Amino acid sequence: MYDLIIIGGGPAGLTAATYARRAGKSVLVIEKNAFGGQITWSPRVENFPGFVSISGVELGDKLLEQAMEQGAEAELEEVTAIERGAEGFAVRCESGAVFEARALILATGAKPRMLGVEREEELVGSGVGYCAVCDGAFYKGKPVAVCGGGNSALQDALLLSESCSQVWLIHRRSSFRGEQKLVEALEKKENVRFVLDARVTALLGEEELSGLVLEQNGASKELTVEGLFVAIGHQPDLGAFVDFLKLDPAGYAASGEDCLSPTPGLFVAGDCRAKHVRQLTTAAADGAVAALAACDYLDRL
Image 1 (cartoon, rainbow, N blue to C red):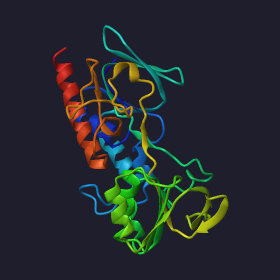
Image 2: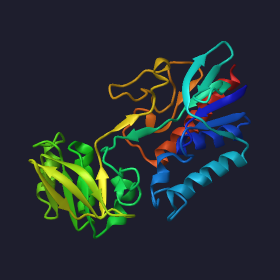
Image 3: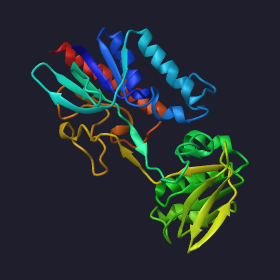
């Protein structure tokens, strides 16, 4: 039995592993896709302290290397269920493997909602992105598009308009759901164009995005862009754990900055937690807080 199992191997989970190991706890990190999390989609990261520029894959590798250098163990498995017992938790995986620990940290992240267009995943990091704050600077002086109609999409378009040559804001309805003040601010931008009652039906380009095919009012049209930022929302990856958590209306774990949950011994860190800012640095901060809280819990058992 481990002292601590961390479900999710992104920045929050791997930071938690490093902190828990430095406190002398035995730690297992379980990740279902790629260690490093969604940051591995970014070709360059320029907003993480200590690195002027680094690829997302390399940053993920360094976070994993650091945790394992401290003595953490890692498994590539998909967790399907957790069970609470007298001694702690049993973590059941799709492969049939079962791991046990006295405490758990959920650091499963939040997945961006995708358009569902062919080749979308293939072009992630090669023109298709989900975080204008993270990757917008790479498109300075270039034409881009933002897809979405809420505040996130409007804010992304405003941000990109400061550096990109042209910003196309694509929304499938005739009006935006976001704040009117944001819409008015965008209307004043000479390099922003609204494309309403439209949806993206195809992505153009071989290895890099070169344009979009849109369907608008029954007609098909093409836009020449080098970047597409999809801003149609996120969804927390908490389906297997909802019985142990309190959720907010959007489905995120309603845990505060202390990263506690209603279940003793269960902690929540990173983008799956209800919070306003979801960035690499806030995920890492959550990992540290959750790990120290878990260590305090273990020391009191």
